[in-house]
Each structure stands twice: as structure tokens, then as C-alpha cells.
Length: 308
Image (cartoon, rainbow, N blue to C red; front, side, top):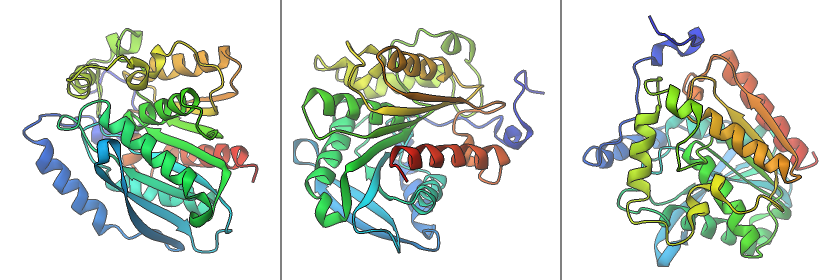
């Protein structure tokens, strides 16, 4: 019996842990890619792919999800998936972004950034920033309203989204209108109470979190630690309005709350949603009513941000 009061919808994942062995990661990522490719996009959503130039001229792939009747000047969510900076997107990510696209409605641009440990920091985050720049430069051709470009991500993808927002501010780029951060990674210092308490939680825990940071920051931070660890930014001013969601039994819970509060203290409008009975990556239980409710709250937040 678990020592954590996890909701019954997630009990089947009590013994599940994300694997972070560098030897196994390539095989796992091949499996994930094949699994995602087998899933058809939701009815009413079209899917197109683009290859663009990422950091230091590396190629990265973008997948554009668009409702078939979307306006020609549509809002856009640029989405960065989770996976400890080292794993490719999971099948449930594809289903989630289709829901965001259909029900907001908006175009979703899903970024296949390069992964640690082969491509350690800053490659992944700079790839994500390159995707943001590309969307801004090509907004008219893509049928996107350049004033309604948001970023979002879950877990490590939340760190990437938050970092891209900070980078866009620092680099005087076009304004990001909103950021949606789902149980985000935000703090490489790993000093919160939830980090200390949740050493054996399902799906993700502080031991795995430590390994993640070792892989991602194996080459150092190049003097830009806040682009890896957004909670360490010198300033949180002039960042986008935000939706931050955290899971109850998750070592990352406190740093998500801390990041939301840091934004609020700097005058940023933030909606913080604390899910109950949940674990990290809980959307894997796609039929759960808790997942349904959480996704609905995210979509409502996007609709408000896009003034729909």
C-alpha cells in the first residue's frame, strides 16, 4: 500500500518511474517516436511538419497542429514537451495538443528539440528559442496572429517555456502573450521541501530529478544559469501572464508554486492551480476525470489569454 494518498485513477502507475539511463535512452526514444507516429491526430485537426534551423545550425522538426476551420490569423501555442530534457514526447502529448488546438481553438506548434545528454544545455533551450523566432518571422505565412503567440510546456518543457519567455524579454524579441506551465521544472538548486520529501513518488522523484540536472547541465551553464533554471532569474518583471499547474505528490510541486509566486510578486498576472491526489505526468491516465478537469482549465486559460 502506498504511503501517499494518490487518487485511484493513478494507482496503476505507483511503480512507474521514468528511465534516465544514458545507455537506454536511445532505445526508449526510438520506441516513443514509433508510438507517437502510430497515433492519428484527432478528427478535425490537420498535421503538417517543418524542418528549421536550430541552435548552431542543427536541424529540428516542428509539427503544426491546426483545426481545419481555423481563422487565417489564428492564435498560436508553441509547445515544448516534457521528458527530463532527455526523452522524446509520449503518445499522450499528441492527444493533449490536439485538444488544445481544437478546443481553444488555436494552432499548436510542437517542437522536437534536441535532447540531453548528447545535446546538453544550452542546445535544447536554444532550439526552442529558435522555434519561437521562426514562428514570429513566419507568422503571416503560417496564418498566425503575431500578437497572440503563447508558449507552454510540461515538466522539463515547462522549464523550456519559462526560459524562452525570459530569453525573449532579454533579447528584445516580439512579446510572448502568455505562458502555460504544467508541473514545471524551474529550479536547478533543488532546495525545496517537496524535493526533500518526495524521494520515491511514482513517475518522478527527487533522485531522478538530480540525475536529470546532471545530464542536462553536464557541460555547464555558460554564464546563463537562468535559461536553464528560471527560478534563478535576476528579475521576473516584464514576463508574460501565466498559468501554472502543479501536482500534489510531485517533487517539483514547491518550485512550481515558488515560480508562480515570484511572477506574482513582480506584478505578473498568474493563475496557480494545485491538482489534488495527482502525480507527475498524471495525464498519462487519459480517461481520468481529474485529467479532463485539468485540461479544461488549461484551455480556458488559453482562451482568456487569446481573448477568445
